[in-house]
Structure formats: structure tokens, C-alpha cells
Image (tube, rainbow, N blue to C red; front, side, top):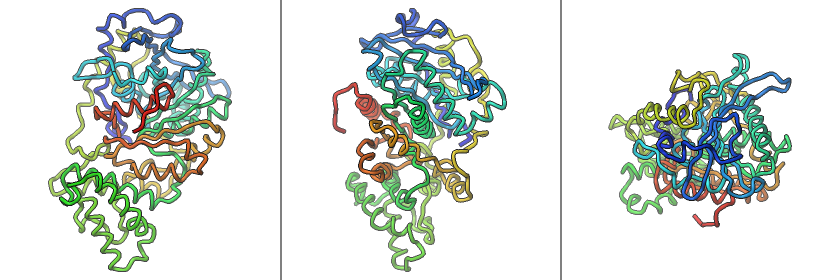
Length: 483
């Protein structure tokens, strides 16, 4: 995913309004930021907090410096430091900094109409937050070209992130705090892989949050079923775009239930063994796909019966000359100006926090080629896995079963999975099934949530409220509510 758009670097993400906030110009609350950090204090409702920014050096096993990783931490005196959760948060890409989750979803102040205001949906009341920019993004930098080559890889990134978290916790005396890892998109791999690495190193992990990236579980256990269960997302999209039969549009919830049932009963067996179908069964499958996707029968490959994410996005509105969005299939317009808000973001760091070091990649200087140079070295890239990636089915090689291994090693670690109903890269029903496919002992510790939004489901106001509520409950600081 080398382009700027596909690395989710949403640009209208700022905290600049803090500069206009009197509290933000004050010194940070006593004992929260360290002397070497750029810092400011502010208030979210009745909660006083400190914003602390800086870098931590990362070294390899031989002590050679590999990188200086930049972070923005929001810390409070609420609760005891040994019991208050601390969540480490990042976006994906690979090659994305943390602006999206930090300044549009979870941070204490988010962008509203070009200005920053207190974020009523921030999860800061539930947990301290540390937003991490991986090497080569934001102000984070690899120490040498050789180090960059290592860090711009899945295994190198996991090792560096685990090292960062251990160093950060130790520097704050927070090793005993409940630790959560929150990753979006490709960042779900980082969350899952780092969880296992931390557990192996003796650092407990209370839970991981996997946002719009699925459940990293290695090679797909049943690819035909996983593919079939993307159908409800396509049905929901076709409903939103007015492309389905009126009998389905009349009752959208019933239509989604029907689509999933049909996918399990008809499409799944057809995808499993398309060569075994006779002409009548093949025609029946094509007719059903057309009904639940809105595609013309002629646009469906009658031989394989598979409609890839790319096929669906490019064919549904082809007669109108439109392509559906990757991250929200309801959208066909070009993305918003990616540079909007860059000056405000920079002002937050340079003026409000008075951070003077380095240059911000993507704002002060061009982006670094992290995504283009990325090495997916966690598993082999095969012709089949590369073809799936080109068709919009994820990275060019499979993950490792990090989630299963981490849960096996940490019997109390929990997992939250968040999926958008209009995301072309994931499926709500597929995620429910993936969670159910774990052993009973493990699946009981996995919760899945489906939101009526896209890849960034928190862009929908109502879903932003629910997403924050679900996260807060997961962190354990809110009364239990049923979705």
C-alpha cells in the first residue's frame, strides 16, 4: 500500500487549538512529563492531563542505536499508576504516523470544522494514551540507512516497538500498569506481534484492540468461508447506494441477515469447489450474487464465482464512471485535501509543546519511503498471496498467528476487534466467524464489534460515540453497557 492515500495519512488531523487554550500554555502537572520532554497541560472536562512529547532511543541486541522513536503521551494523575491502564496507540500503513487515531478519534482534542475542541469521545478518562510514530514517520527516524532497512520490515518493526514500550514503561515506573495495545489497519499486526513479544519478555499485556485490520492468525484457515462472509458488507454498501432490489431495500436489517445466510449456505460451498458445480448450480450462484451485491450477472466470473474487493469497487458503479472507495465503499468522490491542517499540526508541536527537534516527515519535508521499502518478512510472499494483495485482499504475505500464541501464553489477555460495515478490506461477519474459530477458551476472550462506518468508523458521529464507549469498557474503567 505505497500511496499516501492508502497509508491512511488523513491530513485534517490537528491539535492546534490547544495553543489558544490557557491551560495548554501552563507547565505540565507535576510528575507527569519528564524534564527532557516537550510538555503542556490542559483539561478535558474535569480531568487535568499533561501532553508530553519526545523521543526514546532504540538499540539492537548488541547495543547499537537503531532509531529515535517519537511519541505523544497524554497522562493524568487519575487513579493509582499501578492500576490505571496505559494504552499504546498507532496507525498502520505501513508508513503512517499516529495522526489519524490521535487527532480524529481518541485524543483529548480533535478537529471540528477546522478548529480543535475538547473531544467528548476521547478515551483518556479510561486510560493514559501514548501515540507512537514508527521509524520514518512524523519525527521518528532510523539512526542509519542499515537500521532503516531493518526497521522498515515487519519483524524489525515489531522488535523496535516492543523495545519502545518496555523503555517507556520503565522510565515511568509503569511496568505494573494494565497495558493495552491499539492498532489500526496494518497496525493490528503490530499490536498482535508486539503483544507476543512483550509477553515473551516478561511484560504482561492486558489486552489488544484490533481496528479495521482483522485478526492476525497466519494463513487463512478457511479462505472460502472468509471470502463468502464479506458479502454482508457488499450488501450494506449496495443498499446505501440504492443498487438493490426494492424488496431488499424495504428492510435493510433483514437484507443483511439474508445475505449472510445465503453466503453461508450457497456462496461458501460454491467458492470451496466451483469445479464441482453443474450449470444449474452455477447459474443459481451468479443470480444470488447479483441479487445481494447489485452487480450485473455479466460482471460476475461464472467460472470462479469470486468477486474480489477490487472487482466489486470497480464494477458496481462502472456504468456511471465511478469507483467505490477502498476505506468506505459508499464514497466515490476523491478524498479530502490531504494537506489541510498540516500547519496547525506543526504549530501544536512547535508552539504549544515547544518541540524543537527534527523535521516532521510529510509536513516539513517529504514523506520518507517507508511503505515503498517495506519488507514483509514475517512469512514468504508467494504468487498466490501477491495476487490476493493486488485484488484488495490485504498485505502480500500472511501474518503469523500472533494473536493465538499471545493468548495461549497470557491466559488473561483479552482482544477487541472493531470492523466497519462499509470497509472493503474487512467484513463484520467474517470477523465474527474468525473469532469463533478459535478454541472455546480463547474465543470467550475475544469481543467483536461492527460499526456502521468505513475503515475509519469513528468518522461517523454516532459510531464515534459507540467506538469510544466500547473502548472504555474494554479498558475496564466504565460500567458495562450492551451494544
